View 1 (tube, rainbow, N blue to C red):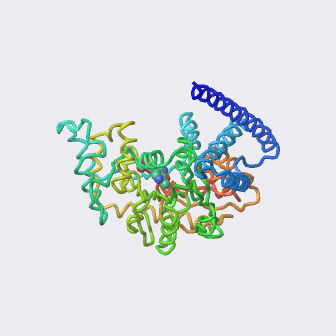
View 2: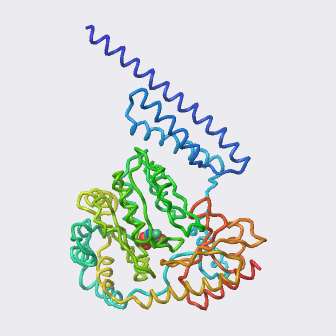
View 3: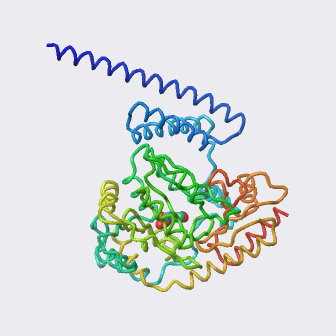
Length: 458
Ligand code: PMP
């Protein structure tokens, strides 16, 4: 009887505490709204790492004082931070920079209306897949290769992919619909809501989007053109805390074309090991490396995930075949995402990927490199600063012209004049003075597009 009374009393107390927490969260959101208003008036960025770090520091101190689990309180705090950022973003009308995809969509609209546009905004190679892929495609119907397959991919393809790398067995390969989905599988299966990942900016936007999708928080390690896009290791360490679970690497980098030298990569791996972080290494541009390139797989770090794709290497963007490589434990987690969502990559596409492997694609690599050189040469004649890319398919210059106001205005003006270029801020809010130029069209078209840019800037 006494215990029953006690239970009722404690349940009542629990209800009251929970109600108070909810009221306090709402109070917090009201304050976030007011702050959002001021940010809008002052035209300042919604996310402020310094302010967030200060809150985090004070929460951690209290957490330790009161004997609460620091990892849990950190995750709780991150959920609150994410909610206020989301609220302020909605309130300030999305305030997000349009990415190259938005420019591409707008370009398509203009094309529909009869306008000619040169596409220097998207990273889609203009060369066709190898001829063997065409042959394979034509045989698929008769060979009845149109069924469900094993979740992680057909054995032959996993086998052939594993052979490209030393010390990789087929069981470590997960064939996914594009490299993008391998990134999604890794982030969503390895992180929990409130966990943190570190992303090096400027960056392909998908990592942050995947983190947002599951309520994980992205911490930004910003790199600069002045530092030749080299990540600073002291800053990297300063971003790591008890909630940090993953570091994203993408080299050769989209959009800068940077490749890390092996010394630096080794130091980064060592920091990740010290803090028990996953390393998600997106290497979809590895075949387009013009300097010596080191895969994360060479470091044999058991918490690393390497992502690659057939899209860029073989000109097979629309086939949607990519893959992730990691230890069995990680692959098992990633494959659950695939099993739940798509069953497997379409069987015909897997056979096409198999047919593409081992074809010589050197001429594609040479032509991308030649075009990158053309872009760099042309930029010399304009008011632009840039670091010559070590790889990938892009140049990411800084505009120092007089009549320049914002990358978005510039990009939309240029669209009207017939060339589509990616705004720099689509790869990170601090890069409004940058644009990304893709080397995915013929030299002739590239030069025509750059003429438009040069005329506009001079
Ligand atoms: N990673 C990076 C850095 C990319 O730029 C892209 C495509 N733009 C991808 C992954 C994904 O490519 P896909 O899904 O076509 O393999």
